[in-house]
Image (tube, rainbow, N blue to C red):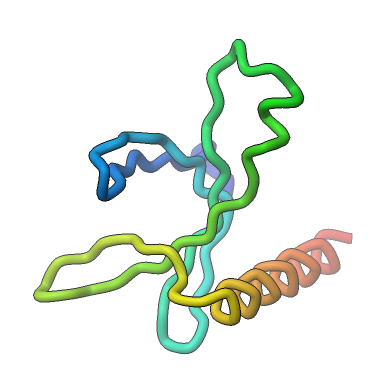
Length: 98
């Protein structure tokens, strides 16, 4: 993703009604689906040890009945495969910038 206009943030509501904000860091197409990689945004007063508990969040775009929404990958295998694709894409971008 390009950083021409600064970071992109999305606000999501989970199935329990909890709202949270994510910073989108990358996106890719894999096996006919769009996936996004995000980091949770943290409050400024978050301690370093607590911040380390938060990690990369991978979500996929799903269209159902004409509605688009984001969901977690269906299995560990799907999650691992998509994570590997993000890492490959990151390595390619680093090679291009070197």
